[in-house]
Image (cartoon, rainbow, N blue to C red):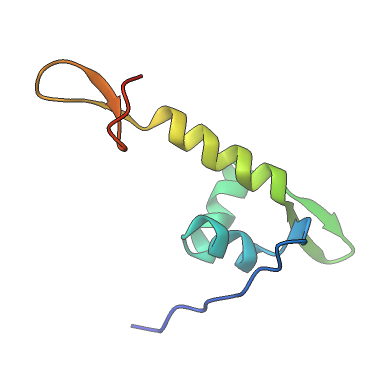
Length: 85
């Protein structure tokens, strides 16, 4: 198994590389490319470079957070943090 590449993402960066977006989301580059191909995450091209706007990464993470509800044993729907929805 290959070690994971960890990229430090400057907080002021607006456009992120695939690796930087993966680091922000805590997933791998291949998964980011799958999300791009499926349209779940948007990107722009600057020449040959593929970049993902930080706002799109944040919006994707927020959509995940909002959709990650589950039903607890007592029938209440709550988020993973335990906050009632």
